[in-house]
Each structure stands twice: as structure tokens, then as C-alpha cells.
Amino acid sequence: MAPTGEWQAGAQRRQREGNALKGRRFDSLEAQNTFLRHWNRTIARRCIHATPQDVAPLRRGQTGALLPCAAEAFPLFRTGKETVHVNRHVEMASAFYPVLLALLGQRIRVQWDDNLVRVFHDDTLATVR
Image (tube, rainbow, N blue to C red; front, top):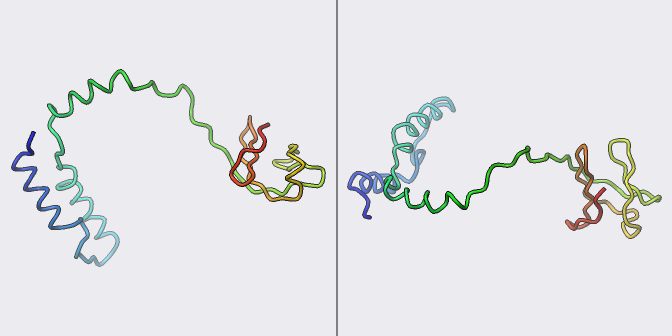
């Protein structure tokens, strides 16, 4: 389906202008933000890229393929760099975790949360506790 005349004219105008800030100078950050809010409301949000008739078949085709949202939040890990001690353990949050003997004395990357500790060597997972 060919774009409508209104959409074509808007697309050509946006191509000529480049972007909202091209060639413009502002006295302050607040003046720039005021302009951008106005531009977003009057130009950017009005861009029509497809008609409802174009989108409907896509939605019908995707409905069966979409998975439900996860039941629980994605876990957030803390990360850090630690050195493997001579007893081949790394210390994190006042606890010691054993790692491979081959990593003795090396600086490794560690990820942890309340339930899990992951030890990485050169971006390769070395240990999970």
C-alpha cells in the first residue's frame, strides 16, 4: 500500500530538516527542552508509518507466538573484581567461595545476589555456587 500524500509530505519535510536540532541554537538548556517538547508533540508523535489495515495482519500473526510475561522479576546481580587467595577462595560479603586452583592469585570477575554466586575468568563462567 502506497503512503498517503500527508505522510509523504511529512517524510520529505523531515528528510530536509534532518532532525529537530539541526541548524538551531538555544540560549539555555531549558529553551532547548521546551522546543523539543513542542517538536515531539507536534511533529514526531504525528508520524504515521502504517495504517491500521497494514498492522492488523502482523498482530494476528504474532499473537500465537508471543510468550506470557515472566512470573517474577529479572534478578539483579552485583558485580565486582576479586583476587583468588592462597587458600583458593574468593571473599565476597564476608563469605568465602572456593574456585579452581588454576585461578590462584588471579583477578577474576564475580557476580552475586542473595541466592547465587558466579565466578568468571576471561568472560568464561568458571564456578557457580
